[in-house]
Length: 125
Image (cartoon, rainbow, N blue to C red; front, side, top):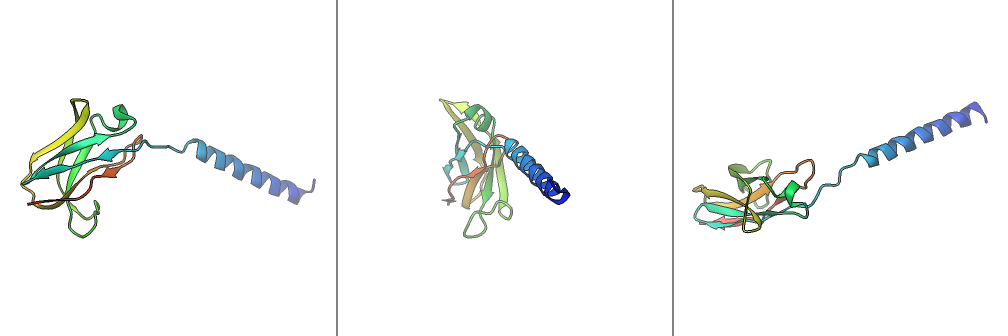
């Protein structure tokens, strides 16, 4: 085998090994679903997941006041937060009366084992 051919074969082998190592360490996060309901500044909802002990139990949920036409957690104003607790078989969150009016939504950020999710946007009057 010529030196050039050996060199190319070695580069391909190293590249393949790195590609396999990268895919072996890739994390598949469990899906998460966040709901919201409320009115007059009092908001609550649930967090659910096929992996409830990792992704719904004790999950932090943030309440955002939406500034534009679409949700944008990086730009929208964070106006509340809560951690889920198990009630009647569901993991529930409740910010209490925040006094916030207008368009709001809830968001559970990504964790090492769980996907992020945002609720629908609701309008509180």
